[in-house]
View (cartoon, rainbow, N blue to C red):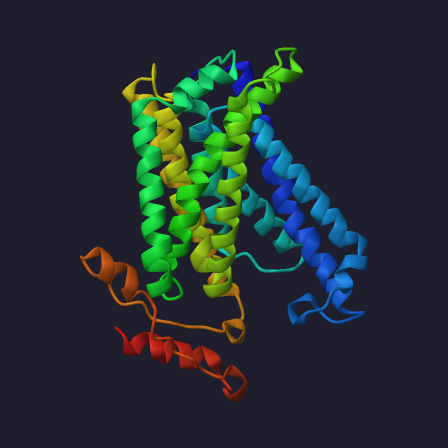
Length: 352
């Protein structure tokens, strides 16, 4: 176990970030409910929630959580900070169970336990944060051949997805938009970490704002975040959240860890057992997250599903695989159906 002071600070910030962000969703939702009783609901184009203090409190908590997450990357390696983001899902699920009376069944609680256990394994075996003395040192890491190859691969893949697959089948396969988000997200985290370390050194008296590398990382961060948020919004607007969330979490976290291992050499100096333990911990967190999302899907009211689709098996070829997806939507007017559960089950069994 190698748990330094910086790791402890980063862990505390990441943990508090998950708490604030997870709670913010519930508080904002209560604010939206309260605002909906006195005006047009947000889902129908209303803006009465802007006059609701609870909604603003939730927004403030989300901002605090994001700031804490940003600072956490300046103290701890991405392999420690990024997977802990799954804990915000636990906070939301538990608070929704007790505050919003949204039922969380035994599988949901099992998913929460798995996320906690996986996070503990990652924290215990996380590598120490490498000491960095200047932004120029980070620049040397970012310009090493291995990381440049990674960046080049990401840009090529994103270009192919944006220019070819997005117009062709972006609205029929969830992997296109989430793939763009995840690839750009891995670069945004590396830029966040570089910028965070620069600001930390600046606050300690070693001004890094004088170096052009600091501003370069800032421009890269803004570019990546704008692209990432644009395509994440497209994914959420096109597909069910219960589909997007686990896929995006797995892809984004995996690529971020890969980028951090290449750029910051997180695994250098660690033995094989520690690395395997971290990977196993991450897999447990992923399974717990998927289980929570599956539970959420089961517990949701069926009439609220606007799109219900069956996705055929993925083709072995890349183009066919990306474009197979769920292009042929099975639509149903739930308002005219007396028992939607029976309709959905009959559709499910018709494909087995």
